[in-house]
Amino acid sequence: MLDISFPKASLPKAGALVLLLAEDDLAAGPWQEADEATGGAVLRALQAAEFKGKKGQVTTILAPGAGLSRVIAIGLGLRAKLTSIVAENAGASAVTALSAESEAVIDARALAGGPLGAEGAADLALGAVLRAWRFDKYRTTEKSEDKPKLAALSILSADPAGARAAWAPRKALAEGVFLTRTLVSEPPNVLFPAEMAERCVALEKLGVQVEVLGPKEMKKHGMGAILGVAQGSVQEPRIVVMRWNGSGKGKKASQPLCFIGKGVTFDTGGISIKPAGGMEDMKWDMAGAGTVIGLMAALAGRKAKVDVVGLVGLVENMPSGSAQRPGDVVKTASGQTVEVINTDAEGRLVLADVLWYAQQKFQPKFMVDLATLTGAIIVALGHEHAGLFSNDDALSQQLIASGGTVGEALWRMPLGDAYDKQIRSDIADMKNVGGGRAGGSITAAQFIQRFVESRDGQPIPWAHLDIAGTAWSSKDQGPVPKGATAFGVRLLDRLVADHYEG
Ligand code: BES
Ligand code: MN
Ligand code: ZN
Image 1 (cartoon, protein in one colour):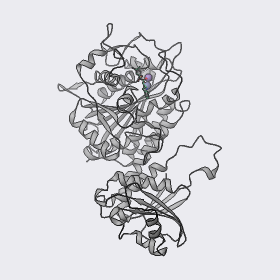
Image 2: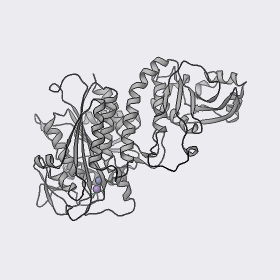
Image 3: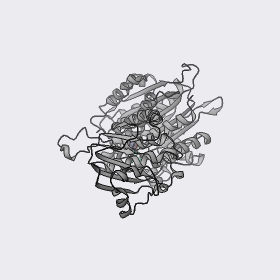
Image 4: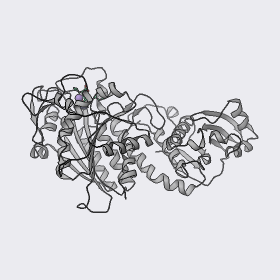
């Protein structure tokens, strides 16, 4: 991670300086100190570049004097309209503009006085570290001069102590995001279910209690659905249960929040095999699980005052002589039977058994599952929103609002009997796909909903996030570099912080 510090404000005598400017700052602002030091070179350059402080505007001034190698001006838009996303994007822009420098000072005093207060400098830091992350463990021949050099940022703010305090939880969040991005980026020969379970066990050092179930325990619980998916692979499946008890209430008093992730470490489709083109993308079919693991790391890392259980179903979906066939009927742990029409609709089978386990073992206050479940959600929503399906309006509103504040957008999709009818089977309790391609994300969600139980006559609050379109990005976007996005870690961390702590 980039090294972040919040020193007392003083301008550097050498190296790179980043100036943040709101549109309101053009007449007078903290940038004037650097302008004076460089004998007016900064203002002359900003005027020549027609820099107006508009949101996202970036101007680089090379060798302006006073020993500085470069001054980079970044626009913030109007001060009254500052949001944490604007500050994060400024941090991300700084990182891109600084790729040739090894360290830099960012004068973020212009953020003070806006609605963000001392948090603004910490938001800026978060945007910077998130953007600077890079997965390069398998690059062995890259020349050092081709690697990004930036290693440290000093952020000048109006309230360094306040900024430092606001940075601590964001740093833990960034560690969680990086864990998710790493897991999702790892190749499928390295990250198979048992290895992924080991990476969960490593969270014990943060105080997370970790329990791992293998095929023997799955058989004992009658988990025929996840076992059916696993049976075509030489890799054994795992279910991992991660518990963070941060409320201080003790186990009995608490109804934990349950987060459940689909962890298909590689999805070939099985006997209903996928076409070769792009199949390598299916290494990230474990992104739901990766998100739950990163979320647990973030919550434990910042010692969140909440009781949470993360559960992940880890399995590899392969075709082989022992693979399940289209037409097979499997019995889930809930007792309900499923006719497997398409072995490529495997995620819902995994979730069925993990959802059952969550409800057996815990008294979930609510359950949120995350899954790269359907290609159809990409047809519906593109890569801009993840699909939200839920039996609970209040939980849905909270999720949508949390997503809005952190830049992870959700769009609510419908559920209903007319869709549920489409997964009726002639020989079992249900089949694992709908009649045709129409409404494919919805029929998948209906399938999962069949495994949501009731408590005191009321269905347990549940939400399903279909993240097939948002788990991976083909372009850099602010604090999210191209590749694994860790979509959902920030959203759910924010959901917990805003509604379920303390
Ligand atoms: N993992 C895929 C969904 C997926 C597709 C994620 C593309 C990301 C990008 C899932 O297991 C799958 O194969 N779903 C099928 C369902 C179909 C067989 C009903 C699909 O979407 O085609
Ligand atoms: Mn599949
Ligand atoms: Zn899949």
